Every structure is written in C-alpha cells, then in structure tokens.
Length: 168
Image 1 (cartoon, rainbow, N blue to C red):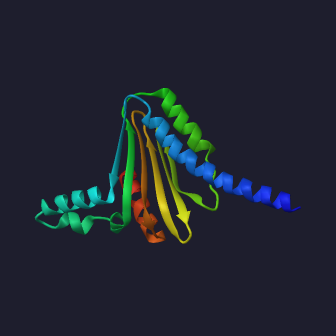
Image 2 (cartoon, rainbow, N blue to C red):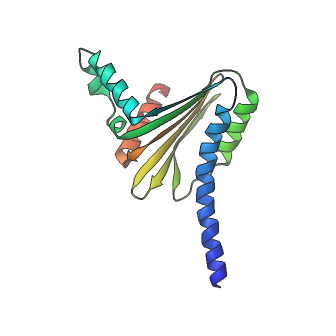
C-alpha cells in the first residue's frame, strides 16, 4: 500500500512538472524556427525602459495609464513569428488544444474568433501567481509571452483587461 501511495504522489508531482515543461517547451520550439524572434527582458531592463518612456512623456499620461501589475513583473519572455509557418502554427494549436487546467495552471481567457486565437494561462505558486503565459495567434502572426513575477488576483484581472481591450 505504501508503494502505491508513493507511486501516486510521484505521478502527480511529475504531471505538474510536465505541464510547466510543456508551456516552456512550446515557447522554445517556436523560438527554434529560423524566422522567429525571442527576447527576454529582466526587471532592470523593464525598469529602465519604463523610466525612460515616462521621462519622455511630459504630460504624465503614460504613468497614469501604466497598469499596476507592470511593477510586479520580474521578467518578460517574448517569442514572435511573423512569417507564415503552418507547421509551427499547427504545433502551437495542438499543444494549446490539448492543454488541461489543474490545481497549479488555470486558463484565465480563451478566445477564438475566426483565425484569431488568444489564451491566457496563469501558474499559481501558493496564493500568488508566479507566471502568466499569453498565447496569441492570428492568420499571420504567432506571439507567445511569459511574464514572471509575484502577481495577485487583481493583477490577473488587469492583465486580462489589457489583452482583451483591443478585441472589443
């Protein structure tokens, strides 16, 4: 009986690790395409970019419109593919369609409108969210984003609002 319980716990732990690896691996696979671009921005670069943009905005409008969650982001990884790549597109769609929510990963938004596909997935770490994955595909482009930080529920709501406001 003890062996069965240990085996069951190992399977559960392995499935959580596999899920994390699937999302990160999906981003890595898209980045391998020779036409893809990958950028990683750490907290220092984010802070410097925001400070520079705010300094160039004499009205202060940019600072007032800056979503509060941006201050909590430690890094952003972005992979873009702006070329027609049907094999890569199908691979991303297959992975996202087979992705299942669990007690660590949950889909916040899933929208399919014609050729446009958007999916936002949060990774929980206790009471906070450590990563937010945003997958966007239209008929021409694939954009995959991973934001890492210590986010709360209200931050997730702000992220969803930011990503969906242009779709209305």
